[in-house]
Amino acid sequence: MKHIIKILSLLVAITAFWIGLLETSVVPRSNAWLLPIYLIVSLGCYGLLMVGVGLMRFPTCPQEAGLLQKDIAEAKEFLKQQGVDVGCD
Amino acid sequence: MEEKQQQKKKKNKYSIIVPTYNERLNIALIVYLIFKHLREVDFEIIVVDDGSPDGTQDIVKQLQQVYGEDRILLRARPRKLGLGTAYSHGLKHASGNFVVIMDADLSHHPKYLPSFIRKQMETGASIVTGTRYVTGGGVHGWNLMRKLTSRGANVLAQTLLWPGVSDLTGSFRRSVLEDVINSCVSKGYVFQMEMIVRASRKGYHIEEVPITFVDRVYGSSKLGGSEIVEYLKGLAYLLVAT
Ligand SMILES: Nc1nc2c(ncn2[C@@H]2O[C@H](COP(=O)(O)OP(=O)(O)O)[C@@H](O)[C@H]2O)c(=O)[nH]1
Ligand SMILES: [Mg+2]
Image 1 (cartoon, helix red, strand yellow):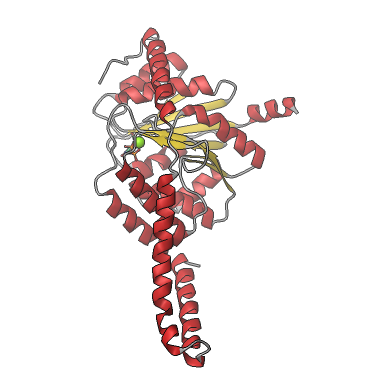
Image 2 (image 1 turned 60 degrees about the vertical axis):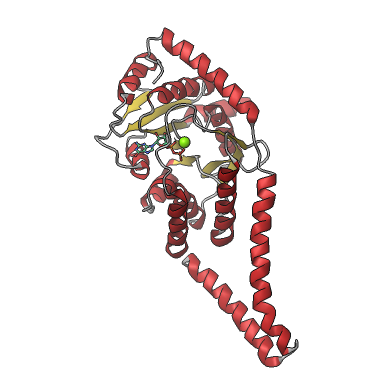
C-alpha cells in the first residue's frame, strides 16, 4: 500500500473519531471543537521538541578530525614512495 | 569457531563501489586506507569516474600499478551522469556477492568497513548502513545551521515515512542492491534516502552500525545548492510513491 494512503487513513480515522465525539457529546461540545487544535499544537510541540533534543545531543567527534589528518599524512607518504602523484590540488 | 569465521571470510567477496567526480587526491587516500583496513578480506574496488576534468582517472591508473588491476577496476563514463546511475553502473561490473557503496571524499572512513562486515555476519542482515545518530557515531565540522537542517530533515522523515533507519552508506547483499536500485528513480541526495526507504518497504533485514562523519578535507561537494527544496520534493515523492 502506498505510504500516503496509510497516513491519510490515519487522518480519516482521527476525523471520524472526532465527529463521533461531536455527535454523541460525551465531552461538552465546546471542548470537542477545540480538540483538533490541541492535536495540531501538540504535534508541532513534539516536532520542535525532537529537533531540540536531537540538536542538544548531536554527537560530535572532534578527535576524529585529528585521526583523519594522521591517516592522510601516512597515506600520502606511502603513495609518494609508490610513485602515485599526490601533490596538492 | 575461529576457523569457521575464517572460512566464511574467504568465501565472501566484497565489491566496493566508489563514485568519483574530481576526487584526484581523495581517491588515492581512500584506496590506501581501504587496503590498510581490509587486510584479510577478499575485495575489489570499482571506481566509477564521470570523466573528471582534474585527472582522477590518471591517478586511478597509477593506483592500479601499485595494487593490481584486478583489485582496482576503473569503470569510467564519458561525462557527469549523476550519482544514482553511477551506482548501478558500478554494480554491473561487480563480481562480489556483497556490495559496499561509499563516497570518495573520506567523510566515511574505511576503518569502519570491518564493523560493517562483522555486523552482517553476526546478524545475517541483507543491508548494513552506517548511522551518525547513535553513541559511537558523530559528525565533525558542522555548524549549527547544518546540524539544525539535518535534525529537522531527520525528524520530518521519521515522522512521515517511518523508515526505521537514519543514514545511508551501506553494505548490501548483491541481489538486494540490484533489486532496490532498479526500483529507484530519484537522483542525487534523495536517491540515498529512496534506496533505504524502498529497502525497508520491501521488508529487507537492515542493520545499523555507528560511524563518524568528518567533513571533506579536499575538493568540494558536488551536491549542495538548493538541497532543502530537493529534500522536501524527495520526501513528498516518497510519500506517494512507496
Ligand atoms: N561518478 C559520479 N560521482 C559523483 C557524482 N556526483 C558526486 N559524485 C561522487 O559522490 C560522492 C559524494 O559526493 P559529495 O559531493 O561528497 O556529496 P556530499 O557528501 O553529499 O556533499 C563523492 O565521492 C563524489 O565524487 C557524479 O555525478 N558522478
Ligand atoms: Mg561528501
